[in-house]
Amino acid sequence: MADFPSKVTTETSAPSAQGSQQGGNSFSGMAADFTTMVDISFIRSIPAILMIAEVFFGLLQWSLIASGPHYLLPAYGWVLFVAIIFWILTIILFCMILFSVQRQLTFVPWPLTVMAYNGVAAVLYLTAFLANAASVTPFRFTYYYGHLAAAAFFGALTTLAYGASAFFSYLDWRGDGVNAATSTVPA
Image 1 (tube, rainbow, N blue to C red):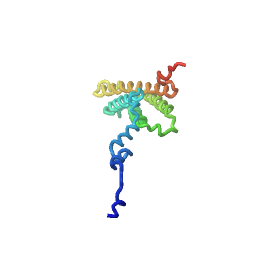
Image 2: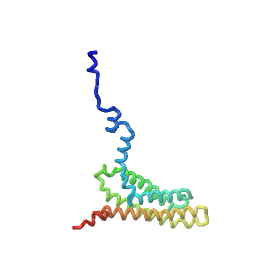
Image 3: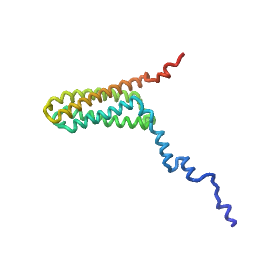
Image 4: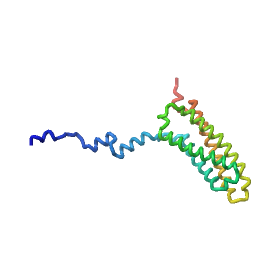
């Protein structure tokens, strides 16, 4: 009986409650950490909507071309190269901005990098769109004419989306994309 006081431990709360407050092994702690990593306000912004449009229209373009006889004309090799490369890079850039990776890579000038990326993508997509549109004619009386013409249409939409992204990223780089409420403060 003399050993009893030395074996007693006193705690003010249950161990599971302390673990969940400190992050522990609970799902609520993981969800709180995950939501702080995701930039929800980015999804509602114009650049994010344009990036989603670029991914969607680009996917439609290259899948329509890939479903046809793209191997018959060398121009479609260029179109597929541009469409697939920028489709993958746009998904990567979208995920990097969504998960705030750019905040951890402070040595990269992100506004300049995004502006250069969108500008190069707009120019190369313009060349791919023109190659796609010019190469539809040989397939006029075939089953694939509609596929390749639709691919040219979606290439034009993707080119416009990249052009708009380049414009908005230029405004962000210059600093003109400020909020109207903060820029009209009376002096």
